[in-house]
Image (tube, rainbow, N blue to C red):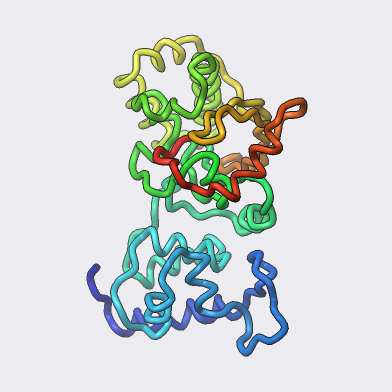
Length: 289
C-alpha cells in the first residue's frame, strides 16, 4: 500500500485515538475488567475488533506506516462505532474514496452494530436490502461461511445465487425453487423502495436478466414481497441439515437488515446451533447464506 502525506496521516491517528477513548468496553461487548489504565478502549482491543494486527493499529495511531485499505477503514469505522459523517471523514483522512452506498464497505448504523454485538449466542449478521453482507458475528460465519471477501456484483448473495452454482450448496436442492422465487420478489420490493436516481439495484437487475434465464423468467412474474420472517433448512458441511427461523430487523430507511437465526421448534436444531461455537469455521469453504 502507498504511503500518505504526514500531516493528514497524523490527523488520522489523532482522530482514531479520540474515537477510541470515548468508547466503553461494554459498548462493544468487551469485559470492563477491574483495572484499566486508559479511558475507553485499548489499542489492542480496537485491533481485535477490526481484525487488524496490534502493531499495525499502533502505527496508524502514531501517524506512521502505510495507507489503510478501504476494507480496513470500514472495519475500523465499525469497531469504533463511527457515525456516517465520522466514517466519511476517516476515508478523507486516509485519501480513500467513500464507498458507494450498498457496497460491502457500507456504513453500518451503530445501533445495529450494538445489537449485533449483544447477540452472542445466536448467529446474526447485517446485510443490505440487495443482500450484500456488511458484518457477521462469529456464529454466523460458522453457520453460513465468511462473506467478507466478496467484491463488486459478487458481494450480493442474490447475484451469486443466480450466477454461481456453488452458492446454492447451503440450501437443500428441494428448496432451491422456493428460495429463487423469494429472492426475486424481495429484490423487486427493495428496488421499488429505492430513490429513482439509484443505480445499484437497477444495474444488478440488468446483469441478472442478461446472465440468468431462471432469474429472467421469475422477474417476468412481477412477484413482490420483502423477506421478513423465514423458516429455512440449511446444509452445514459437518452438522448436516439445520432448520432455523430467520428473523429480520429493518433499518428506518429499509436499506439494511439485521438477521438472526434461531432453532426451529420441534427440531434438534438447538443442539446443532450449540455445536457451532465448538466447530467454528472449520470445513466451511464457501461463503453462502
